[in-house]
Image (cartoon, rainbow over all chains, first blue to last red; front, side):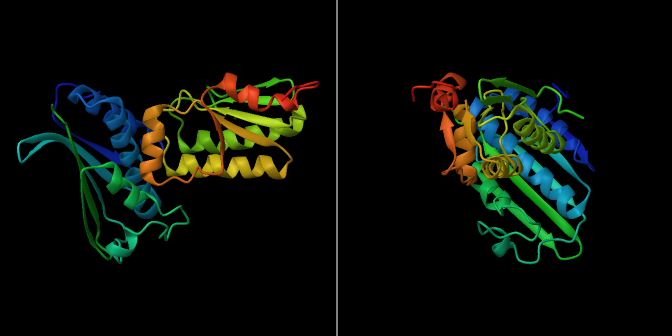
Length: 138
Length: 124
């Protein structure tokens, strides 16, 4: 899906979208030249953040695009929702912290799997999480 | 509804469960029920969860697997996870999944060796 394009938006409003998000990201990352381990890291991170959206905000969007930061080519994924927001980002980044009855691994785990992660959140307004992974060239 | 692509077959006293490649959350939840019902129906002593086709093991999937192992245990069975791909193993540990107390095997064949003592007249 969406081959030959370097950006695309996927709306997330049900659990069924988990599969389409994972498929789209797997295809895009593989086409960009990521190896199987990095593809698995990126898809798993996307899966965590997609689940967070319908768990906490019920709907939102994911945008993927290729990016260039300091001469490094990579993939950038932006997850945006207009849900309740994250009250304390520092707390949310701690392993084991959860308000949703999960394992509390999603956010800190996602950060470990990716190269960059930025969280912007306003209580009552929503959350925007941007993650990036760069292609390594020898 | 039985989870599509999920096969549960009985080998001696062990259930061999093949987990599909990219299951959604509902499929994973159905799989859990299917395994437990099959435990009772087949009078199985153990379960091998073959995850060699699984490409994405996220925290929900891992939590459901860990839960399933505990549920099988309280029903009196042992579980072995078989065939985790290298890329999935790397990702699972870096994500922070705690699979430390889970019995694992490189593939189904070695998992069958581990549960050989469930077989009538088994050696191990």
